[in-house]
Image (cartoon, rainbow, N blue to C red; front, side, top):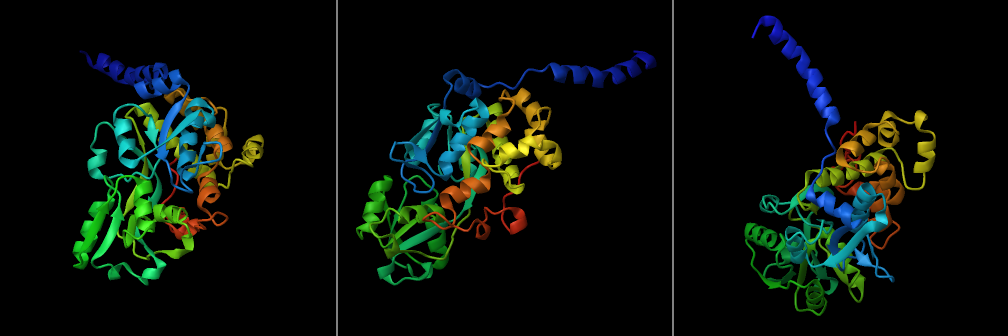
Length: 351
């Protein structure tokens, strides 16, 4: 090849690449195809987790985790109501996803190395940073986990809880006995009836489960947090589906940073030219999110629909877990606060 031909080849390559990329179709995958064909997104949650997922009087699941099912349906199908939210047990939820009988799970599943290595599941984005703790009857007079030597502990079969307990008690030089009960209702009944001295789970789960006690005030959550539990959305593997979930969550975080909610988003969009560049990229008609929509096969206004139909991250948190709820959680005092407030949450750049 002559020098002139080499130069022509090199200079033509970027143009050819650009044309190829411009002509590339939207990402496609079997999970996204299945969701669109069914016009419904099957999402698994815990059947009994007040604040996170519990059926209302109409049998419709409400709660923090349930709203991320709706986030996914709003982003992909343009309608949060098209989330088919089903309550299942912990172990069954992962088996169901691996078997291809559900599209995703939003039910306090901790992302671990061995789970992430399972080719049947994709851990997409952490929606809540938590840690494992202990709940005891107030009548026991215990104020610290350091006083739990020889305790009988009710815990969940198939979860990370048992390993965390083993590691922590061994490190403290203490012994214990486990009542390993897979069914949550039976496990709570065993604890509330006095069969166990201690109930072990993630701190947020303990906060929710305490509301199921005959007298919630009779039970105390001890101060020790013995593990890191990044609670993560789990999906059937599919690049377009995973990207859609991840970036829909970033939309909620971006809205949170800028104070955009389901109540004021219409006013923000109506005056978009006066808004920060981040919001213009989020809601503009010729913007980063419309470019993403074309590539991922989403509705053009997917970002708007997520915020309008579900809300910002802070809005969802406060609606189900915040100060005005029975849980009274102050987000600013948790790891789920924005980085600027000392937490771990911040939006990835949508641009």
